[in-house]
Length: 227
Image (cartoon, rainbow, N blue to C red; front, side):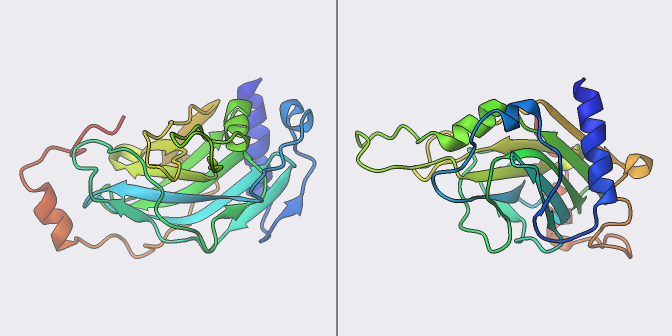
């Protein structure tokens, strides 16, 4: 059932070619059974990489809990976490967003990204759970006795060598970030690309970057543990 649902969503994304939110009759029973309006109006997402292991996201699509499709051909730049060397550091909020904004929690997301260290394009698809939606609607328990409200309104996707992806919801207090365990997360590349075939910021190939080469010198691929 999960694989069938994922296939239906993937085919919908492949058929859609428009920008901006549009309504589609695609709501899971769980999404349709509740009001997932966010108290803060909209959530934002960002992408980050380990230090000196850059990647760039070229395209993204999100279906929210109301069945709206968001298509992002222009995205905020991918950040780099200087503390993530050899393994992931605690995920943190890294500013606001100009483009990466959605009004309701995500049912499904797919994005295309180039790993400059792997010199290949990846396609990552994610099916989110109702537990994630509920967390995004629930105030963060803070150490100030609840004198102000904070929310899990910022989703960060970590992109690492070997096509490894992790997802977190950091809050503003910089506490340890809860990691999201989606219903399904898949990353594919090469001949297995579907939506992301031909979607790249490097159509002429990947140049060797001196700073990357200096960093990986003497190290073994994938230059750390990114699970």
